[in-house]
Amino acid sequence: MLLIDVSSSRSLFPRTPFWRTLMNDETERDTKEEAGLSLLQLISSIIAAAFGVQSSANRKRDFSRGKSSQFIIVGILFTVVFVVLLISFVNLVLRNVG
Image 1 (cartoon, rainbow, N blue to C red):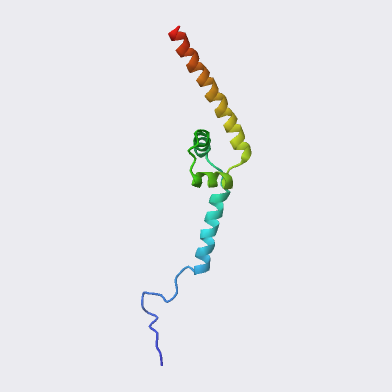
Image 2: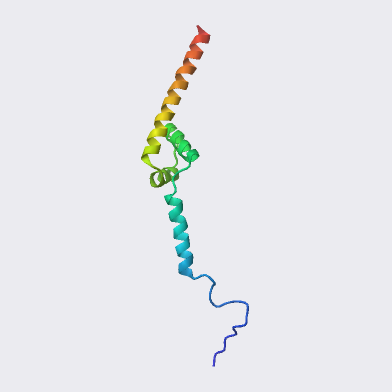
């Protein structure tokens, strides 16, 4: 007859069932994917894309978690600020040269 010592401190079964651990991991992943991009992530993605140095991992993240309206608005604002700074810099240089 096979006897199992149940008084030992080690349990034959884990405290948390395997399926529950998997479910928790999937829910955490889903909430991370559902959460939008932070302002810093959005701005860094816009700047990286503008200069052509966007990594493929960030691009995938942007397409899966970002909203197109956010990228359009921040992209237009970035373009306007960039053009205004460029014009101001050129005018400053031309004024000091001439």
